[in-house]
Amino acid sequence: MALLESGEMYLETIYVLSQESDSVRGIDIADHLGYSKPSVSRAVGLLRDEGLVKKDDDGYFKLTEAGRIMAKRIYERHTVLTTLFINLGVDEKTASEDACRIEHYISDKTFDAIKAHMKEHGA
Image (tube, rainbow, N blue to C red; front, side, top):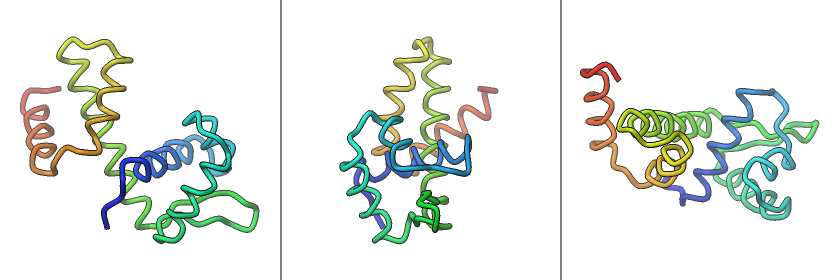
């Protein structure tokens, strides 16, 4: 299933927040992304409909197994691309922002080549 960039951003955000805490609330997602709570509610509802996110009895959001796999892939792209750009001499803020945009569009083939290159050259 292919998600739009915005859906991927929400998955990645829930993944990152869940690494910091087991309790991810809608307001946490809104604060992290700088979006309104109603926007977050709508987007997370769409992700729930896709079977990528669930809400527990306490109102906390959790990634399903499929959601976790997808979010982890997106986050890996972000971190690898950020590292690559920093190694090229780009400042950390710009590197992260650019990686955030590119991570949603880069092909698996190109990303795998970047990872292999970085591994081969010790980056």
